[in-house]
Amino acid sequence: MITMSVQEAAHAVSGRITSVSGEGKADLATGLKVSSVTTDSRQAHSGSIFVAIVGERVDGHDFLAAAAKAGAVAAIVEHEVPGVGVLQIVVDDAVAALGSLARRNLELRRALPAPFSIVGITGSVGKTTTKDLLHALLSELGPTVAPVGSFNNNIGMPLTALQVEGETRFLIAEMGANHVGEIARLTTIAPPDVSVVLKVGTAHLGEFGSVERIAQAKSEIVRGLLPQGVAVLNADDPRVAAMAGLAPGKVLWFAPQLDAPASAANAAQERVSTGAFAAETLAAGNIETDGLDHPRFTMQLVSGDRAEAGAAESVTVWLGLTGRHNVANALAAAVVAHHFGMTLDQIARGLGRVERISPHRMAISQVEEEPGTCFTLIDDSFNANPDSMKAGMDGLCAWQPGKGEPVYRMAVLGAMLELGDQEGALHEQIGAYAVDHGVDALIAVGSDTDAHLDALAASLARGASRSREANGGSSVSVDLVHSLGQARAAVRQQVRAHSGVIVLLKGSHACELDVLAQQWNAGTHKA
Image (cartoon, rainbow, N blue to C red; front, top):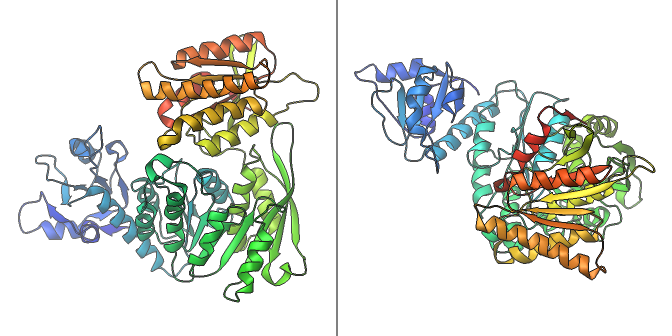
């Protein structure tokens, strides 16, 4: 962060400085300098402000002494804690204060003469992958700050913004939401120069109540743009394309399919015809995947003044990541990078170099749990919703390691949460989707301690079994298990019985399938 005094920090959060006796309190606060902010006392050090957040399980106020011992110069608290030996800034809401401090840090950065831009990203799926791809591209243009993993809420996003320093050229702000209004609040902390909307899907459907409400929430990132800010929109998603009318400035498009019904060319032409904005589209055509599910496609740039004539600049892109669904994410990142000056050739090379993204997202490894019984693991266990489940299984079913080599595809799936009244039917649909698209075995992982997770896993298995019977009782194996240990044993049994086993591991974070991935990957190597 940009260094400020404790007194300046207190002013930024509208806090009251306490825990220092005598008239020297204000002078001391002015003299103490803050160079970093943390909500974890274990990460505090000299120059840190520790923000004491009251969580569901842990109260940060209990760790003020530890933060002070580690060198923190001050703490932001909701009530004074006596006898801990650290300057305290008392506020009504520590989470809100964290956001205010992040906002002030960005204001200080914008006040410097060197250029600085904020890129906000949202969408029901693909936020973190797009963030990782864009981080790799923009880092070639200048120092870039981006969140670790999925720091995209009212705590994670401000913590990322507080990493911005005087030399930072770009901040990539991933913005997620469970309710209408949350992204709007995040844009008041980090108002974007560029806002990217990837897709409106069914993630958190139970919290929002309808897909229309999800679209409303995602549109807040466009409404929150700075004056003349740039909106980057998915022309192939009608709900996203409709957000063009909310943009205060230029609209740029990406289209994962050149021949999609809501094609990029049509969407761009419609915008150009208004005469209000210049339009530019990056579209993908000739999409194919190799045997390891790495996509190759032609990326075409069509500018508004050339769209009518059909002229387009193009380049071939080989993605270093696996999964056809990542073409859309790559295009979104490419539009932003091109906007900031990268050529298509530079973008194509950059996208090809990215082979690793945030943990537990389509991470591929070779697992040898027992001597002589090796299988390929596709670890996509960070989280799940119906759209990402389908994308993961599409990747699994496209996997073909070599001509003539045996392949046995297994989907180890956990529950999807926050889907509301439709959750049972949506789980059955995903189970059926797995069978209909070529999975050889499905293991639905429930819980022996959580009845809700167990019931949703049962719905997955039920949908798969019904589809199997509808297909004439095919040989697809369907199992329902009730613990990670049982899931591991079921996979072990299949690996012993079949050659060329490929396992997709995917479920909502609460299912803890990432623990299973960590167990399998202990002592193994990444592919």
